[in-house]
Picture 1 (cartoon, helix red, strand yellow):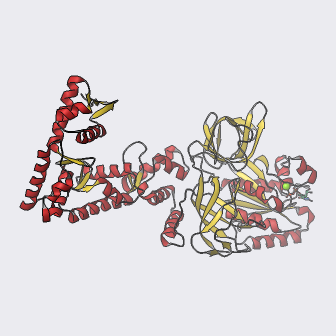
Picture 2 (cartoon, protein in one colour):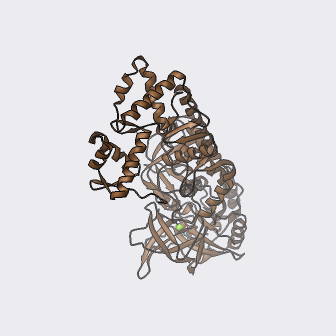
Picture 3 (cartoon, helix red, strand yellow):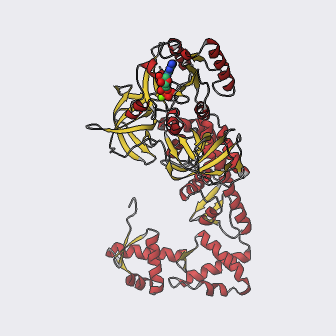
Length: 638
Ligand code: GDP
Ligand code: MG
């Protein structure tokens, strides 16, 4: 049977804690101060065996307005809420505020419990019920059962248990197949055992012995022991109240607001994109750039607000917003949150995380809005993954980053990628290389093809476009490895040819006119004859007089083609280069090594040519310098 958390909500003194004690026998006001003052301050925890046999975890929250922050930490984990309203008082300010919070957090189900029924007569009870029904008409509790109870007489408790059971039975459980995640609500040290954290597991499952991570600080720990409802267990799951005994953690390392998650499943962030709804009863419009209090999971953060759609959001409005944090925080796509005004503190709105790892956006801009809308509307995990890939653009997304972006398990990520692979996904090689969205990939290919076509048209004498020049013409997020991988793919499809740092369209050949051919021959001859004492480029070109420009273009064409080779600011003919290689190979094979002076003598040149040539040989991996001498670099297969 799946696991669920039942929580309380409602105004202070309306009988929440008394109700839980009457249902479960557990007093959730465990602090001395709480017992002395007769008022809940902190979250209280219990568990409850329902008539069906299902055991529900219970979270009892404080109702006092000073402790809304604690209530928020408890509300985040609730599946079914008992909205407690004292029959003699009816709906009060914190009843409303709690209701707003539950509504913003999209709590799934609830029951209205009218406590203190013994203090009012039947007629009054009916009036209160009508009033409550009317006031809940526009909330998720509009069709919720209303159950009157009395703690001292026990009236209604049996019926309430059955109602809780029925509502739980129709409530969808949290996803136990996702990556494990538990927002910490308490942490303490037990002498002899070490650090213990408690919280509601909101996703996945965890086993004794497994590695976990404490976020956002990214501290690694291991599960030493697990406890659910006071009993040791081997496995704990989403929807359970769990106490985790962690090894590798000391006093002060973990506190409320931290998240214990499957190792590697989440990445902290300092910028998130959200869809935010401002409550109609928020007293002021939300201003751009202001600081707000944001409650997510059991944490409270103080981000700055950047409105993406307009400069001001009025009460009752909904829009896309970016929150920026001074310190790293952690959240997952789809998480719900609440915001409260910075000072004085009121609940003013809340919403859903659309992008946990956001970038800075152009604001008040159509493309930004369109992308966020796509994320918002992406119905399932596949559509979300696709949108994430699309937004990543030419940078792509690695398997690991996709997993963290979706806060899911490696298995689920592999499944998603498998499902997307045939249609929407291109993988640029093995290992940690990223996936690109098919549309982005196709677009990059198209950009490469048109850049090459353009180049050929503008420089018909060049053999092709220098690789780096081509890369510079593409989006800058495309890193070198991805660029190489795309070129390799295009080459395999025989759409391009990439050789010697030159890229051209397949089928493109430079055709020289007779005149151009003569110039090419003259250039080649000049360098062939020059031998190891390579002539100066400027001097060679000067000989062409008015045809200097053309000769220059043909010179580059010969360099592209590998006929002429540039070595630092010198140029050698390929035949000369080949001779130099022979000289070096033969000499080193005979003598084991070679100095610059020896090479200079053998080639009858001077240091001016010998030094750059040998350095070039080092650079291309033909020779290796050892002290003042060269040896041959061992080549594979020799
Ligand atoms: P909480 O702040 O909502 O947790 O309220 P408590 O459970 O602490 O109850 C506040 C006061 O109301 C206590 O004095 C309780 O004894 C009293 N109380 C709670 N439930 C009932 C009830 O059903 N009938 C009556 N007569 N008193 C109740
Ligand atoms: Mg209480």
